Length: 402
Ligand SMILES: Cc1cc2nc3c(=O)[nH]c(=O)nc-3n(C[C@H](O)[C@H](O)[C@H](O)COP(=O)(O)O)c2cc1C
Ligand code: SF4
Ligand code: SF4
Image (cartoon, rainbow, N blue to C red; front, side):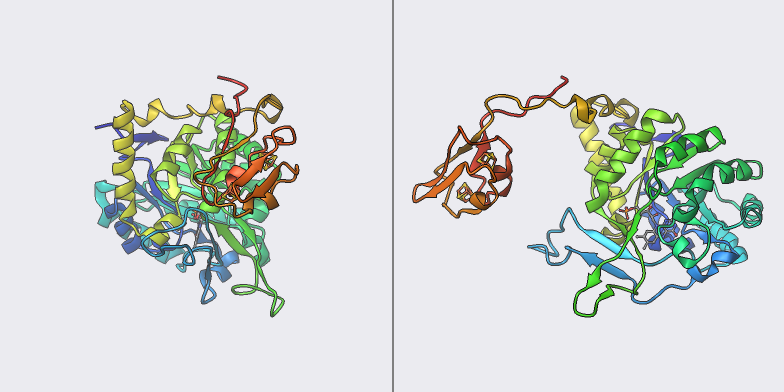
């Protein structure tokens, strides 16, 4: 059996899986269920300071899933690319209740898991108060959360609207905190990786690059945003590409451990994040839609995969994808001899490829799709859209680097 243990900021986690700060970690009971479900740690839903206390009361209803239950085969089969749009900011607790709840959570969890408090202030006074209070709790870890996708839209300077202040907040809170801590960085800024570097310099012990983006959808019948009517946080598997990019970029620049996780939906996603440099991987939507116990399943699958590949620990795969990620300018251009080849045993001449070929290279006959190899650009779109997998490309795209 491979060893799934990871260490971050001197704290040992039994595996890399963290329940993200979200609805499932709203209180000590959720935290306990998160650990019992197999996660190594739980980031408790964030405490907002007094100036952001509007966020302690949520709109109802507040969740909207796109491309989820209309997936063929649902609920036995779940989709792999969907989005959750939600408007739910922080914990409903005030300062004292939050600290009591964190203590209760640690009492309930004991040594089975890591309880991670999450704080989000507007002013330095608020940060100071919250950091001092959390020092006196049993929390194993503290996260300074400057990532809330819509907090700034509440009319206060916090979350995604204050991300440029994070290095200053980090150094200020580091002077107060007596516990290991991470900083959670919103991607809604020009250069989140530069912020991560500045936070590391300011003394952050870990960086969390897994925050969501914010956005709207518009109902064309009413011309109003779908949902409560304002910005929502957008996360879920549809966004994993952004998360992997931010983490890969951060891993090249910072030495402190990275907490990753936008769009985690299954165990493979956790491996992907570790391969681009993450130490811990958290999930929000994945836990919300598959339940607390999915963490155990993920850990077992990761273990089986590591064993099958002959790896003994996660250290052996951390960052191994980084050297394979090319710069755009390094990608090989126009390799010769790439064109579409149709398998006439599979082609039912439906014509779907025809409408997506912009090189006028396909003719659909009774025999099936015929490709004019002189005109074919080798773009590969017909192979992507063919419902019968009747198209293959004549030679695989060669890689610029082995
Ligand atoms: C309903 C909901 C509530 C959330 N609340 C918080 C929060 O209080 N504090 C925080 O740091 N992040 C919060 N998040 C963000 C998650 O911690 C995490 O960064 C994000 O969900 C990761 O993306 P994923 O949902 O695609 O896994 C919330 C996410 C959701 C979906
Ligand atoms: S989409 Fe596929 S099945 Fe349909 S005509 Fe093209 S090759 Fe044939
Ligand atoms: S590979 Fe591109 S250019 Fe060639 S037939 Fe298919 S869609 Fe047309």
